[in-house]
Length: 105
Image 1 (cartoon, rainbow, N blue to C red):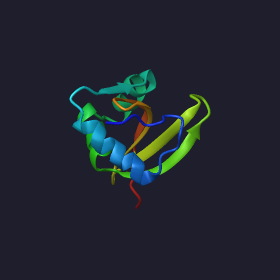
Image 2: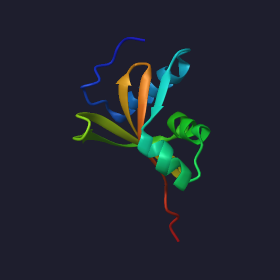
Image 3: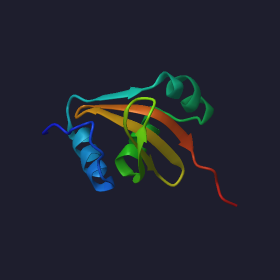
């Protein structure tokens, strides 16, 4: 896989293409921030498989600049779960936060 420029904003379709290539890599690194593992995944009763499913099949909803980490972050969602992540390298994604979407009544 050719290197992406992690400082450049990817379009929604480019994010989708990146994720497809990422999950086809034999050696890949999916890092969870301590905030995610200690708080969010427990609070929302989410497992690593849930996060993988969102990244595989979710819709890229938003791209925005992450001031705190000085880079682009991407939000991807399924019907029930959202994941915010950063691309560190072609073989490395960092999960910033996860959440369950509120059910609309």
